[in-house]
Length: 546
Image (cartoon, rainbow, N blue to C red):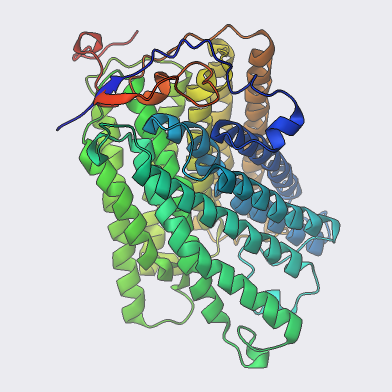
């Protein structure tokens, strides 16, 4: 396979880094520097992750005993806000908006994104949509579930309009960011960087951006129609007004299933970078991994009907959607097998980044395998709307995105901050996080398979032991996340200064200064060898570690 490497400035710049350039809060708020915007996205997303996580702990605390302690309406609002915050404010923008903004232009050898001012506008639109969802909390919350299913969302007296209004506004941020990234990848690659010489993280961002641009308008129109129905009483989805609630589900999942890949495709991109750099071996099957990202984006548009297996659709329609859903597993399996093949024979470094890389493989594999049961018509009827679905969703989306986000955070932390973190504390935190996460959700597979329905805050005593294990696991998981926050913040103050290229990467972000200067490179870098062409002498073909 034809590949490339880099010829560029060595990054030891005498210019100011992006962190120190134009100091002061105002300079950050009006910046058009993609790196600063990426950092602002990351801080904002992690803040909302804290809010959504605390709501999740509240839900798990309520479920510790079979007898509900909270008022049912309060419980419904709690898990709805948890879901809405985590999906719309955290998981969808988590990696594209943060690492996509910070790292992707550096990987391309570009000085910024194609439309810097539009990039800043996208961030403020994200902030505006977030304000609407925060106002929903102050207005008493919403109790529809994060999917806003009709006809209940058409008739409930909770703050539905502000919640879906927030999601509607957030869609514009997603569209503009995707458009910006598409143009950047097409037009701003460094000289010599062909499509077959582009880092796989950029391929993942490219496929993600296509979904954002094509699918997001559908959910925007759907939510606008729901607001219109509630405001003017015109029947679109409410059967009492002559509408069709199943139509809402078709519109919603036509967007929301592709958006699953908006969440997970960038996570795949992160793992493609870390698995090769930290095993010091050229990625196995570069072309297949790049093509599979585009294939997943394409197939994702035609599988929404597997969310409607019990909606009354025809048997033929259900069979077709089931078959197509199994088809998504093919490009996903290509990635997983390629990552494992990359590890085989590589000189694996058993550092924190590699631990989270392997943790992601474990988490996502469980999520993928359990998805086969939900893709099968017969078993889905039994498992539909049970805790099996909750566990599957969290393993694929929450676990997949979160482990990749933490993995990427540790991988690019030296480049972003110029500081190194404590490997010892990081490895301890990984054990706590990994154990807590699995203890939280594996019991949910068991009780879901035994018929425990989701969204109930009172349940039969026979499920108590599983709920209690899950609740204990969630608090252990939360503890691990606070440990990560602690040692990363500590590294900002007292961490060892990061070497220019701590992991020995050869893609362009490692050519830039650490931290990068305001416009990334002192001179225009030129691509002369591939992003994964490590010096042959560094590769131990017979395994082993450093």
